[in-house]
Length: 242
View (cartoon, one colour):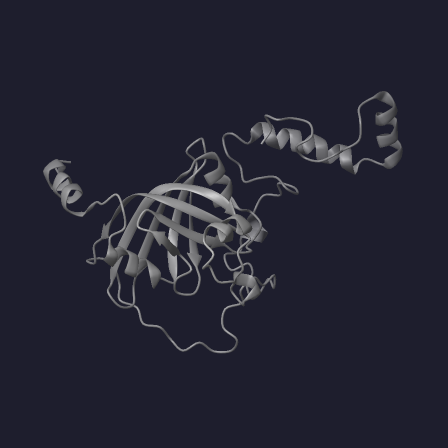
């Protein structure tokens, strides 16, 4: 696109391999960020994370960490990180400085007790829905500015009632079927993933296992006598199914 010289200048002037003091201060007061991940096939996911200021912890100028709270149970980001550690974090300050910060790096999933042994100063959040199930630790590889020119300026509004329902399972409080997806989604059956190019084998295997599990007990006993065995979980039959 004829922008190599401009891009080289941006990399030379703005892209760091660490968090400088102003970046660390910026991270420490953020209440949200956007997280980009991909699985081993390059299938992408982008999600939103939020918490009290400082929930994205600056462990040092080369390392960030954030808690994974209780969510919808899908764990798409954690699953992607286990397959592909490359992550992209985007923080945007819509309220005060109207500026953004990109952090790209390599992530790993860390158990809560392991993280607390390594970093004894981490506080335990008093809100049950904000207690870490696990942590994601990110080794910083790139940190750079997201310019202000297209970032809108927001203002906070007074919060009414009890505030955010951290960790709730109440369907309506979580947003209900806001987009009407439940009435339109194809019936894929229990535990089947969204359709992806690499999921066909997994779906077929899961369909067979589900059918076997739902058969009458007498037929299942017959299978056992014949040596076919009883249903014993999604991942007991095939290591290649997904």
